[in-house]
Image 1 (cartoon, helix red, strand yellow):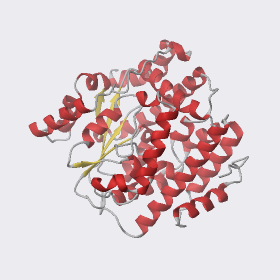
Image 2 (cartoon, rainbow, N blue to C red):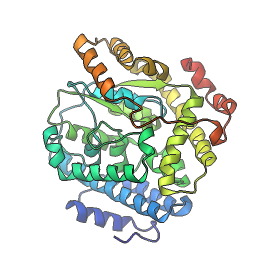
Image 3 (cartoon, one colour):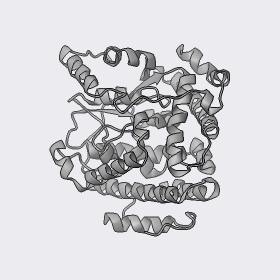
Length: 382
């Protein structure tokens, strides 16, 4: 397939390709088009993409539209979970242990999570025994295997598989409002727009997509996670009025170094010449700005949050889960404890090798990071 020389002006071409690929044509509420248009223009005006990067960016956008078409078709057909009751959302700045806690909680049979392939192609969750034979499961598995082959170091930082619990970004990207886009390319105009965008329409579709995916197992509690919820914590609490949020905290010096390493790996897939210091300074500015916004929401709704700490997760993740349960007014029984500890033994966090990083390699000093996050550290005793 030929990729346009310029993305600006290609919005209708993208839609036509998505309709042809999906065999569907209803994209639902049109508010997403503003975000997509700004995104396309930003790729042209400020991104420094390689030819492979342009190809990957284009097909990411196309697949987001395909996923959106499939979600709208299922929602319109009425295949929905009646309601999402008391979901748990795990948030935190990236690289705080959210993935480990998410997948540990999601391993329990009375819980459900957003699997990668269903986030990409929303539909009522089929029985797990049927996944391997499903065409879209195979498509996502193939794409992730190709990613591992092209960038084997990436899975040391963040492992992904088609059938594993993954981030809510997969659904939010179908409304083109997510930090994932700016984490893989320098798209300055889009980034500034996203800070102030109204994300209510995107979260309405996100909620209904979850209701679609969970429609066959409505009794199972949703366990969800994504650092990008920090962009719209007020909207998330409004959309899910009985949700509780688990926020994980970590020393910001280690955190900024780690997330900069992750984003640098992602950026170099599309923009091989990007400099480490450019990435790190953008990450520092971005997460400082997002954290300030989140803190204001936290002060308004303190009863909706439970705090956990990265250092405690490193020592004993199951004990952290037990403490979370107690704060929810629930208890972790012996059978659940044994099941979780067995899951941890079967899924060691460093099974693909260690992830090493330091502040110095990104041209930042500990002093400036601590200054930026002074209020954060004081508020949470980090």
